[in-house]
Length: 231
Figure 1 (tube, rainbow, N blue to C red):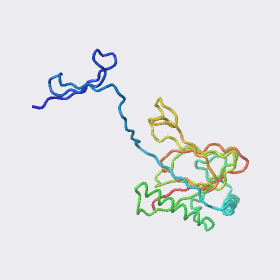
Figure 2: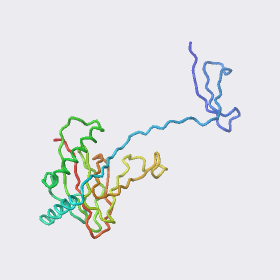
Figure 3: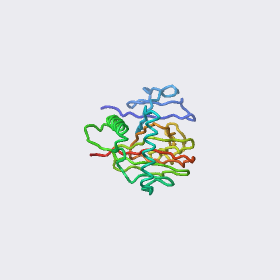
Figure 4: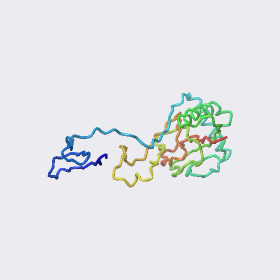
């Protein structure tokens, strides 16, 4: 009949030698005392959350053309759509990238989404883009939100003057906010701030909470936001 096995921890105040005693069977004489050395720990990062960035090689003239197109859209329909945007303007039109002037950008975003979705294991699923203008005047911001029910979300920055508000991603682990450890360290709680730049493309999971900090410039901060959704 096989004997039982047990692990016994002997702390520093134990009368016996410090260490883990591994016993097998019924005889204590067969105990093996491990030396008091630090264990060789292996780390495993669980629940990874991935975003993607790319600095698009759009020439300045093309960015200026896109900015002019956006300003013309605002002039033609000055009432903002609202949603999460405050003290700025966002388009009612949710298919901005379908306009001919944005055709090269639309194709680049489609390619980027296809690549990112492939890394997520989402392949051979037809998708299309929802897209809209997101513009902030001085003091403008977007409050905390998600893009529910989408495959992927993102934004492309057209104009980013000094003082532009940062894009902030909220830590998606609900329990970590109650932990002792704070900061960008393993198992710590920390929101992630992304500094925008003209020509920067950002993709992120649509379920990840995010917001935009207040804009501190008299020149507008302009981006095109988008969702990849099933066709």
